[in-house]
Length: 376
Image 1 (spheres, one colour):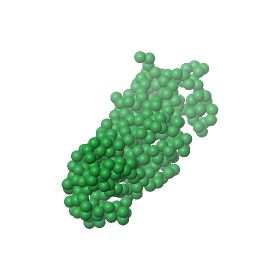
Image 2: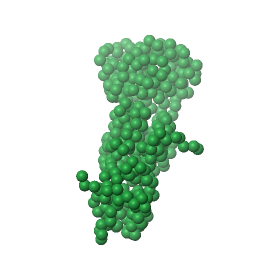
Image 3: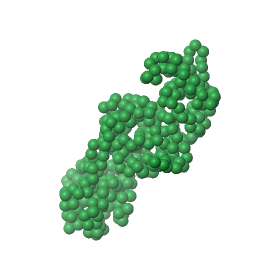
Image 4: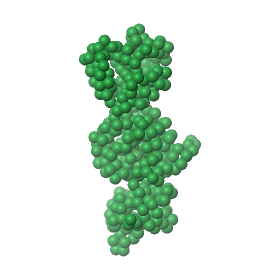
């Protein structure tokens, strides 16, 4: 398979885990064009309800008795509902039935799906919280209003009950359900990579998906390592919005939230983090400005691939930020090397060779090695 052309190499050497099912191919493509290696490891799958008899029954109810208000919770769910109507020859009838309705969107992605279907959102909950949707609708009377509510895969989150308690007639529409992880072993493996230096970023696009992935990471014992790496800046935890970030925040991870709640914005957020002026940690050494990637090092903007052993040893020196590490300490970063200091010496020699003689790693006689950090 031919690799997509790279627009630039800002993500060269980065391994990025996309912990999402929906539209992950689009996000992966944007990152791969910048040089990243992408692994898709969703902890949940989307199970469409296109042939669900209950969904079709309620769609026909809305065609016969059109709603006054349509609440759209997710873009993928609303598009799925429109697709299901089209597949069952109900599209034109449903469009007519919804033509006079007021559309309320729970976030920018929901608004985009409404616009794509040819409607216009009257109001958008920028926080993406159902509580904000409820507060907006209940700020004026909904008594007697017929309200269609399209839910996300986890079902109702209390909105239906609040509207019904204030006199609304609510029609519940669940267009897809969350299913199990397509590959649970892959989820556990990528969680371990994120915890122990084999991944540079993990990206999330939904709160249920983030919650399920974090629960799998906890079972694998990976959360403490992820927490430490995210706090040091060596692991980017990216979320498409604040609701998606909530399970990550609760796990104590340092989270970066995309500016506009869209996949393109999330991709740009990752690229900015790892480019030369981004937030990824770097150190000025006598051999140049150094930053680390899971696949090697970046020295003065040039990516230099290293072996797994080289990444472990140079990464330990990088994290020490100029403090001397003994050969024994470096050897302990290499699980298959045991405590043999000779393995550390060989690793340092190979790192120096890969760096082309740049003065990055210094030998401290009778003590060990240190990163040749410039004192500013």
